[in-house]
Amino acid sequence: MKILRAQSNGQTFYAELKGELIKRISGLPYDDITFTGELYNLRNVNILAPSEPSKIVAIGRNYAAHASEMKAAMSDTPILFIKPSTSALASGGNIIYPRMSARVDFEAELGVVIGKTCSKVSAEDAADCIFGFTPLNDVTARDLQKVDGQWGRAKGFDTFCPFGPYIYTDYDVRNKRVQSILNGIVMQDGSTADMSVSPSELVCFISEVMTLLPGDIIATGTPAGIGPMQKGDSIEIRIEGMQPLINTVI
Image (cartoon, rainbow, N blue to C red; front, side, top):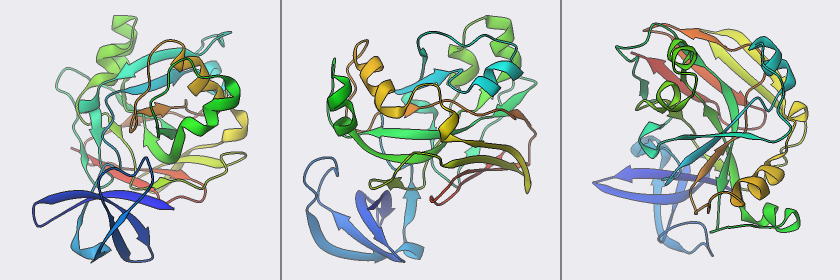
């Protein structure tokens, strides 16, 4: 299924997308999905970020080639950091260039959407906690990251986590192409096969640290080729088999 979150006539709701047809879902989509019977055309609604995360848990250096370009060693365990819920942005929204930064980078990533409350889940049960997957851009103020020595400010600005437009619930993440395209030019071109730690393994590891809630996002790391964006740029994140995530920098 392709799940989205939409707004129409002042109402916000989740829905399934089939072609151009939107089938409205009653309540949240994470349990048993019930349709209301209301139908919409995709062109007549405003598409929002496809979940409302309480937190976005991101992973540093999950691709060896990216760690190498950052001149950093791979870690024996996943490196976790938090992007706040206020950094979430829908596809089509504007990434706001912060006044305090002089370099803002794109990072193409596969996003994992959590579908149930999970705490200290086993490796065998971790996959059952995943609702689906979505393209994600871990936008980063690279200069501030270097100055601070930690990543909260550099990665936490409002609009610094675009993801969507849809959640794909039936998706095999193995060997999928991950790309970023800046103003029509391919900048990153990697594969999920190069991840050091898989999505299910990340769910298991993170849930030992913190409880994951339905709608939370895990950003699984980026391949090599990151680079800066300028005001007016268009940045597109493509995950093979998914609708691309497209945003403009202002």
